[in-house]
Image 1 (cartoon, rainbow, N blue to C red):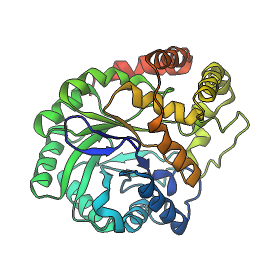
Image 2: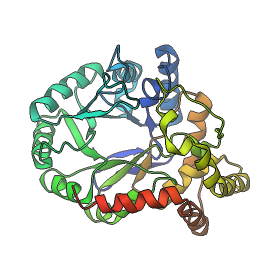
Image 3: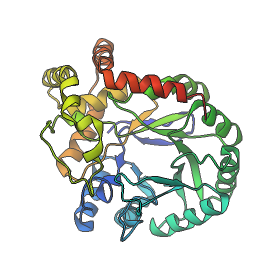
Image 4: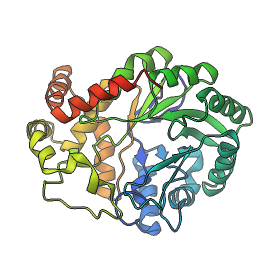
Length: 337
């Protein structure tokens, strides 16, 4: 496994991290703890060091299931890994909607209470990266950053970051307490946050990319006839899994298959390698429940794409009308928060 630094933070992590959410939340019924404990141990053996969870990844019966799973499974390896968890949201499970609507809360007292719970569930005395899960419009980000300064001084967290933030929010937060990284959705099908690359480079901030395989679509293992349980699986309502999306992305998937064949790789590995070749401070965190996929994702760090191949993917992915229109709308929002 290749390793890289998140911006100028000095934090060294595996080039590919492991997003743990899907083990407990949003991708069907939760997986068994015994099976996932074995998977997490395998990840450590494969060289993964960055493990990402959140206090809110769980079920209605146990909203903290994922942190409990990750904390117990990785307890024997604590000195070899980078633990990443989040504060600031809960899910409105009584709304009757799936995905559940988000409820944000980043008040200082809530942050401190959340941290103590996460430390307990993760069986650790500090969090390596503590993320504001979503910006809380009711709490100035400067106030959140001051809390982070305090927690760093206390030794309870080592670094912090923000998820789904705009340029203005990033600059304001970083001015008070330097950010190690930003965690945003990023893949060939979700490229609107590339508009943030200049400011991340300017400030020396890394990017941790969640959903780097477009929630599995770029693995090329789904078709227009694939179905998901709408009561437990968020993919049932995701636009990229519609028949129209498969048709619009036919040329992109064909190009990925061709390039994968040339490289003796898989479309998923090409998708992750493309991202790793974009910037040296980008770290994708694909999730999986399967040992074979875990190893497959790790090996993507060994694939080097030529500059021309990266540009070919860029050009092909930009042809997607859905992605292009979403990116336009997102750019308008990037300067508003």
